[in-house]
Image (cartoon, rainbow, N blue to C red; front, side, top):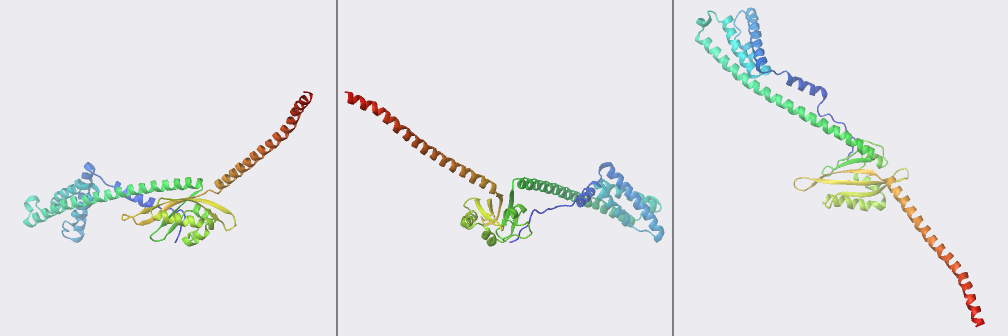
Length: 321
């Protein structure tokens, strides 16, 4: 069995959360999406002009399709559709000689294919982007929930530490045992990464309480109520300490016990106060018995001379008579 103290956990780092939030924020829609689509189409046509000069020929619609996809990713469906349509118009102005009259059947098919491809890509990319944004939002919610749980765990640990209470968990299936630092301290041990296994811990319990402890664990695992037991732990320095252990067994859908979670609280001071109280009560009882005995003796001693004094006049009176 292994054990570990309070472990810090960071579900999503601050840097990753910032990146996710930033990725979600660079998304535009409506008029801004249309503007992005127009700008992307213009940039693509300008780049096509430059590449055409360098390549000394027509580069086709590759840059225009890329612009439509990029505009759809950032500006949504309006951006992708705007980039497609504006790209077609600008392509006709700069790359089709003779305007509309210069269209060939091949060019018409190419443009139609580009429009269909651009619009379809806009819808597809925008849909994927929407799904991604939803995933980002879900991750942000999970991160926020995890941070809230972690904050509650820290507050719980602080409250437990203030009350001298530690927590433990026993994975019944794997045998893994997890202790908080307070449980180590209650057992007279220094907090460490490894806890003693169950037989070793059982040997640390006071011999007079060991059987009750084992029976209580077995009863809880068998489903006969929760664990609630007070027992003694002799420390290595020879001192004797009391612990109050409480725990509950959790089961799977078939009813098989899978783990047990509980707390341990050092109640040595409480037991000492109870012992002092019982001793004072016993002393008071003995003092009361002594007082009663003393009063009985005094009463007897006082009654004896008074009875003698009262009896003498009666005796004198009888003689005279």
